[in-house]
Length: 167
Image 1: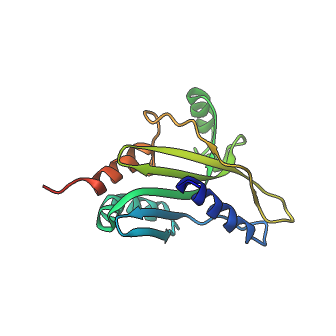
Image 2 (image 1 turned 60 degrees about the vertical axis):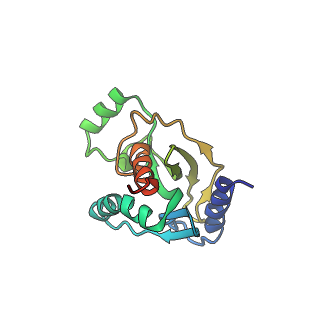
């Protein structure tokens, strides 16, 4: 079993503990370090807390001696053309959460100093049962166009800083 499979199994196991329709996967960060694995629960209660974490991440990874990370978050995703998205968002507040074509997924991004890959599992919800998680599939992410606090480029840069030799 690969490290990726272990992470997917852990995420699925968390979902099996859910009892309410509004239960959700909390953000977690799993690290492989020089001294062993580290699992950290994350709390993002605002855009400011996400920004603060993104800023601190490279130093945190370096201090812990991280060699591989997996970032697990529940997120809204949207598949559309850039022009269509810009037109639709110009007519609203710009939030994917409010877009009619959005999908809710658990996203897992694995990163080391050489690269990153993202996987997603669709979350299905019902009014009367806990959410269920579909199978994980590799996301077709264009690293050159990926943006945001936790984009592939940002996570790779953080891991490169974490693993860089101090001269």
